Amino acid sequence: MKVMRVVAIALTIGIGTSSAAMADGFKDCTKLDKASWKPASDAEAKAKAAGYEVRRSKIEGSCYEVYGVKEGKLYELFYSPEDLSLKHTIAK
Image 1 (cartoon, rainbow, N blue to C red):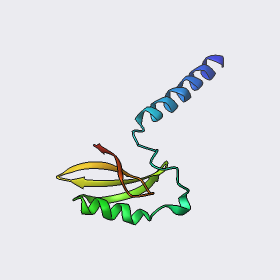
Image 2: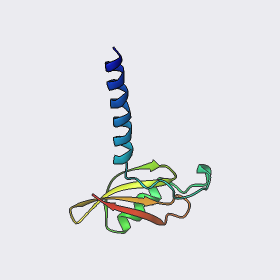
Image 3: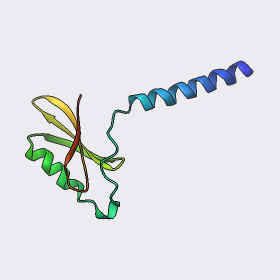
């Protein structure tokens, strides 16, 4: 019984560690209160204007994360909701 408990704990810790390591998002874009953020649709429009085919967007920490395709490659674009400046880009 103790062996099973130790194995279960080890698996839980391993899964938690691996999922944290897999997260590659950029999370710190602004300290501004969410009520003052510009609309997420504006971040999508900015990505489209930069030549990306926008697939979806979401809030990641204090950033707008926009998923877009450009020249056949997938990108994650992180915009500040405060001024819509591009803070970080990850090519997948």
